[in-house]
Length: 113
Image 1 (cartoon, rainbow, N blue to C red):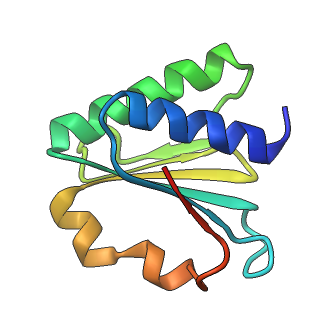
Image 2: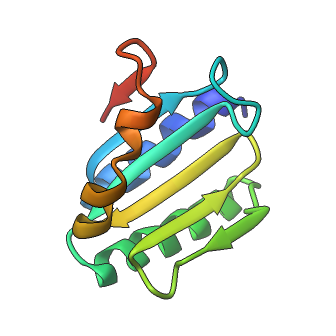
Image 3: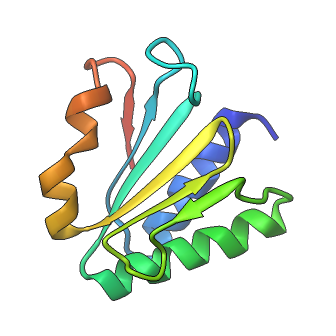
């Protein structure tokens, strides 16, 4: 499965589980860290934690294991690093504070789900 297809699959999973404002940002031209960032919100820390756990479970079914993961238990900002695809799941307050979309979006590289 290619990075773009994996990104689309994860975005669909997040939307299906009521993830809010799900976007994928192609960052290939901006950084060597990854090809895609996925950013999604949860209504609360519990919801953000649940979304992260669901993504992790479903990604493993697809044969992808997170290289690193941080913040899942706290549920404020969970990060799942799949190498070329990095998933960021925020609770509302934390997402507003960091607003990653503004840092990485140039108007042509973002897809909203």
